[in-house]
Image 1 (tube, rainbow, N blue to C red):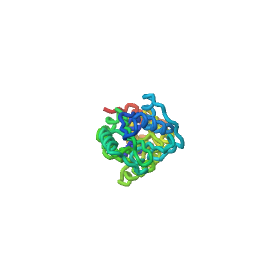
Image 2: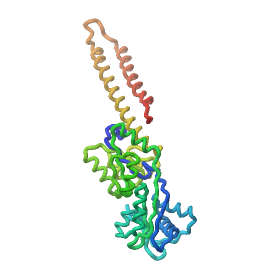
Image 3: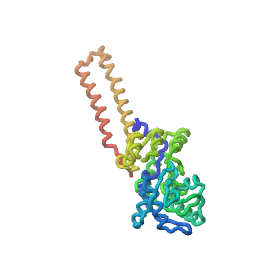
Image 4: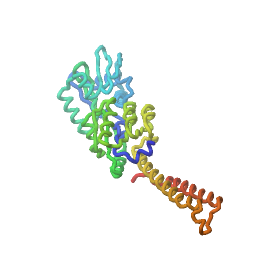
Length: 329
């Protein structure tokens, strides 16, 4: 059913991280406030993110490991859903997360961190903060690599008359930078996990058939809510179970192939229905003896033969789907 519905989709909504991008973050720059060293801030952030499975957490830990930093001991690790993480480090509570975490904490940023975040946002980089109490003490700029297939996939979807939207929890600046590079039509940025399916509903209320492409646990409600849910094969089990279709190769170009296969399958169905209907419109009256007044009365054996011919032709026509070019230019 999902494959059949795909031909009618008006908009494809992509989750950004791990779908349009590789999800391979790395710390490319950082800034700290007075009284805090870069090594101390990075080591503390990596320690706090020690129990997190998020891609950004992995990037921070990898950066600290690459520099050979010794990590402090943390206690009372806690996830702040959709905002960041919290832990006790060296007898004080510290937080690591994005802009929403700072809003949640009502934490302040120094002018240096504000300028750093603005510059990173202009480059399409994600900014994560280390905060203690009500003050951000460090900021980390992380870059995510866009999949080389993403731009071609979106170009192909546009050529097919399909609109492209992007969902992300990243800042508006980061989302806009990716959207400009990939020529994405609609951007939903700074979206909390529990709000992703609301964005799908918003598009559906505009009278659009919506396809959703995602890979994470947070994408599962949106994948279920969409008219067609498409999961990246390398994504989480929850996302895969929530989707109607799965991209085994985790390649955005396969979304284009889904739409092409759906359209080609529908054309074959229509061809076979018209062939079968037209064939029977002619043959059934013959079998009933419509030409009997002129001495033409087909034998039952001949009727069975022609019926078999009809079935064979329909089957052969369906098999020509194997020759349909699902590749992209």
